[in-house]
Image (cartoon, rainbow, N blue to C red; front, side, top):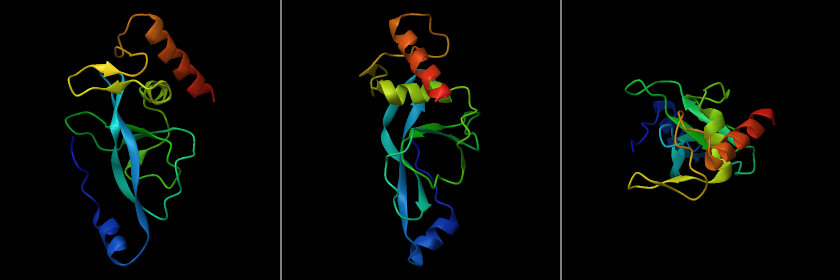
Length: 141
């Protein structure tokens, strides 16, 4: 897992006494359809607003090796500046469903703790149906 490089403006703001906080989220594994453990997405300016907001899909605005990193979080705004929160990425519904249903990525490559979504080419089974139902519900809310 890579560590984010903080923009100079954030470092200056921290050094000058402006309040800031870590924006937490779970990275979504697009292949396995599960969430990595919570980690820091970025550092944002402002007081910590808490984690009582609807789940938001955050997609990096720059790709690394052709892949845009996707996180989900229920942390309230302000959102990290270099992430798209529009929900337009096709995997946002799957990621929000994983946040709701709880499949966690395991370090051994497996998935645990909820119905596993075998990825974008999954055949219809009970687990994939549950993920699809939650994704539909999240998209219509």
